Amino acid sequence: MATILVTGGAGYIGSHTVIELVKAGYEPIIFDNFSNAKPAVLARIKQICGRSVPFYAGDIRVYEQLAQVFKNHKIDGVIHFAGLKAVGESVKKPLEYYDVNVNGSRVLLQVMSDFGCKNFIFSSSATVYGEPDAVPLTEDSPVKRANCPYGQTKVDVEYMAQELQIAHPEFSITLLRYFNPVGAHESGLIGEDPRGIPNNLMPYLTQVAVGRLECLSIFGNDYPTPDGTCIRDYIHVVDLAVGHVAALKHCLDNAGVHIYNLGTGNGYSVLDMVKAFSKAIGRELPHKFAPRRAGDVVSCYADPAKAKNELGWVATHTLDDMTRDAYNWQKNNPNGYED
Ligand code: NAD
Ligand code: UDP
Image (cartoon, rainbow, N blue to C red):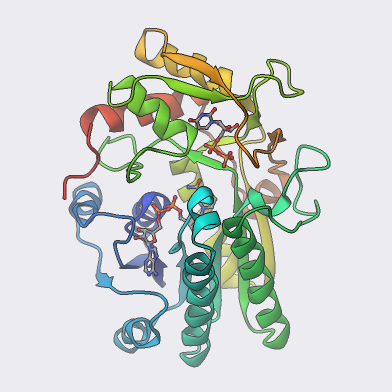
C-alpha cells in the first residue's frame, strides 16, 4: 500500500487523518516540528492504531530535513497540514506566516519535485472564498483576496501548487477547502489542544464546559441571520479525516488539479452551537453577547456535492456527535496533552 508523508501529522486534523490512513491500509509517516503539537500525541496514535507510526522531527522550511524522509522512504504522496493557523496572530506576525505557510510549502513542493513525488494534497480553507457573495459555496465560487495574512497564505499556496501543475502536468494536486473542523476522536484520546486561550468557538465552548474558562462571549448578535449570530458549517474532524482518505485515493489515480469543499452543507449559528453544547452537558452553558469580532464573515457553508459525486465522500456525523466527542475529549484531558 502507498506510503504517505503527513506534514503536520502531530496536529489536530493531521493526527485524526493519520489514524484513518492506517485504518484504510496506507503507510503514513509523520513529519512535524511540534510548534503547535505535543509529542504525547504519538503514543495516543499508537494506542488507537495498535502500532506505532513512523515519525520525523523537522521543519518544512528546511530542505535537508524533508529530503531525509524522501531518501529513507519511497513516498507516494504527501498530505500537507503543517502550517500556522491563527488569524489574529497572522496579522501581528505576517512575515512568519508567509515564511512557514508559503515558503514552507514551496520547499516541500521542491523536495517532492526533486524526488519524483507528484501527488500533493493541501489543507486549504473556506477562508479563500472571503465574504461569500452567495451561500452555499461551490468550488466555482470566486476566490478572493483574503482580509488577513493567514487567509492570503492559503490563497497563495493554492495558486503556487496550481501553477506548478501547469508547468508539470504529471503532478496531481488536490486542494481541500475545509469548513469548520470540530470534535474529536470517539476514543477521547486525541483532540484539539490549542495553546493559551482558544480563538475558535468549539475549543472555547469545551473549556467553558469543564470550568477552565468562565463564560463564552458571543461576538455579535446583530448580524443579518435568523438569530443575529454568525453561521458556519461545522464538520466533525473524523469526517474530515475520512475525506482525506477519499481524496488521496483519487489524487493517486488522477493527475491534474482537483478542488473540493469538505463541509457538511449545514449552516449552524453560534447560538445553535451553544444550545447543542448545553444539551451535551445537561445544563445551560454560560454565555453573553459581546461586540462583533473584526473580519468575521456573516454566513459560510458548503455545497459538498462535488466531493460526494467525485470522491464518494459525505460527512456522516451530526452536530450532537461533534459536541459529544469534543466534550468527551476535554473531560478526559482537561489540560489537553500533558507535556
Ligand atoms: P495544528 O496547528 O493542530 O496542526 C499543524 C501542525 O503543523 C502542528 O502539529 C504543528 O506543530 C505543525 N507545524 C507547524 N509549523 C511547522 C513547520 N514549520 N514544520 C513542521 N511542522 C510544522 O492545525 P490543524 O487545525 O490541524 O490544521 C492543519 C492544517 O489545516 C493547517 O494548514 C491549517 O491552516 C488548515 N486548516 C485548519 C482549519 C481549522 O479550523 N483547524 C481550517 C481550515 C484549514
Ligand atoms: N465566536 C464567538 N466567540 C468565540 C469564538 C468564536 O462568538 O469566543 C464566533 C465567531 O465570531 C464566528 C463563529 O463563532 O462567528 C466561529 O468562529 P471560529 O473562530 O471558530 O471560526 P471562523 O470564524 O474562523 O470560521
